[in-house]
Image (cartoon, rainbow, N blue to C red):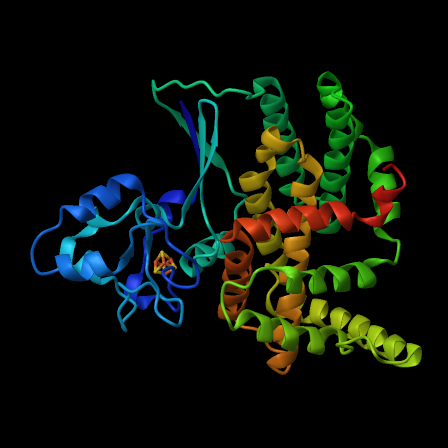
Length: 388
Ligand code: SF4
């Protein structure tokens, strides 16, 4: 079995009561069979509380009215951990924020940026992320697993990550190239022409391909696209009650026209104001937070390294890349809204806060991840539409 981890994997350790949030609220924690069996055998003073705090039928920990796990105390510490020790935790609690993507004979481990401490580690990292591998003797076989497609996806992901980390190119050009590669790849997967995937990698090393992508990037369609992507977020399941008000406030700061009931003239004014704000925000970032493009590179690499190879199961390589790009664009929009709200100021903690809250809403809900992919298929970037 091959294991891969990003090079910052071992830097993480949970800061527990010091954490500004908690990972034990907002989503239903499902305990594994082995843990449930162990809980049934617990004796002593904690037994009674344990028995009544678990939904035995569903195998989940009960929550209070604020969707907090009932074992979580007012200091944001786990009473089960305190009473029974670390070993008593179920697999989900032991693992988080570690995330595993499973493939035949491969385990790809990452740390989820939905944990503020992980977001802080990733955003503080200046060097390009490297991926480390190690092996064990364990072997396994999956039914219906296509090792050839998987190996091509792994190659494609490596090519895309190398492009994203090539800091000699502008970030938007790197992103455009990666989207174009993923799109070409998708066409070949659809045609079941997996053998020709290597040609795609060569094609995007050429000057002609770079010029094609540059020309597409200069087309002025970003405003309508990003606004649509922003509004798509209201279609998602909400994990925390404070998320929707946060989105509504950000939307009004960014685009001004909630409800879309304004006249055309007013909408044009909002668009002009948005463009002006954006230019000013970029100037501000370049002066006060010049590493911001590095954060976006790290986040793009994070999303692509985590999700792209999952295309071996559903053949949807392109939507996973567009989801990564749209996620980073949305994080950028949310940061701009926060900057406007703070009277044109931003602290690093605002960035960490935005990243982990966005990630939590998207990545901790399978329905949201599925919906996001569906929306990416529906709302394809306009420069690819004519090929469909
Ligand atoms: S969110 Fe991260 S740092 Fe906070 S309690 Fe959970 S694992 Fe620890």
